[in-house]
Length: 86
Image (cartoon, rainbow, N blue to C red; front, side, top):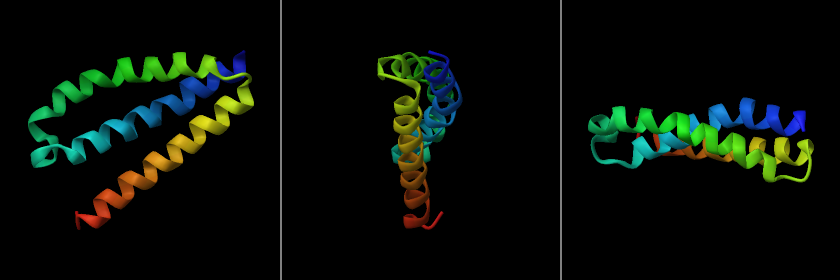
């Protein structure tokens, strides 16, 4: 139980940030007019990721899945920024 709680808390935080940063990258003008609404979405998204960690069978699977999701989101964000030349 504690493994899933820590996975959701510790890995959900950067994953929420990466996903919202990707959203801002895809919006026109790099999401500048949408910055405040997207920042407001951060906490509900993080909370949803913490809740989602409890759907895994054990803590190890939660760590593996959320860790892989973090790696994929980071790679997508890195690729989107370097492909655009930013």
